[in-house]
Length: 215
Image (cartoon, rainbow, N blue to C red):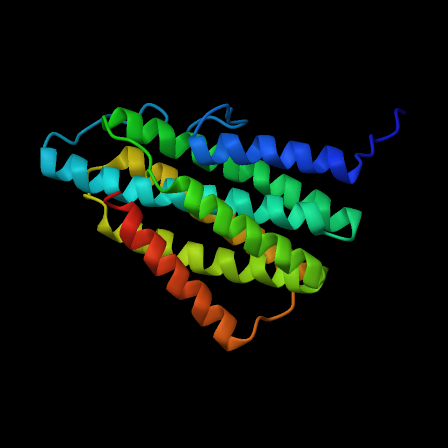
């Protein structure tokens, strides 16, 4: 059996930079799973509804950009190979989410957030710092992030127009994936983050979700 290739720190840094450009600029992605929207009919005919759903999906896309950055930053500094592998696996599923959100935005004749490079840089830095603090704290960031993202996705599911089955299917699959990522992190030994850190994460998330809806 062929031995698994081992990458040097420089190799990993170059790969992370390539991933950063793709995630922040919304290019070069390919989903490994089919879009959950499938063949559900497009039923949005009101321009106001389309703008509203586009705003929600733009926020979700920016959230996935941030998730990519977080996982890539943590994967760069993770100490245990098992933890790094788990980060890489989760990051691939987040790429699926990115692509699905981009496709939905295209269907709605809309765009991704102009501020995605900002969200990426901040989240990557946070992920790298978490990784330097140790794998248990890094996993703790994953668990808390996924918990907050799942709550946010549930809110968006409630805010979608009832007839918008295409967006609903995408968000439901994303929510299922995020909850699984959080569970995996907890089972791997994630440390519970201090309350002030959790509060700061919520504040940063609030700024991103409010801004990305429009910009």
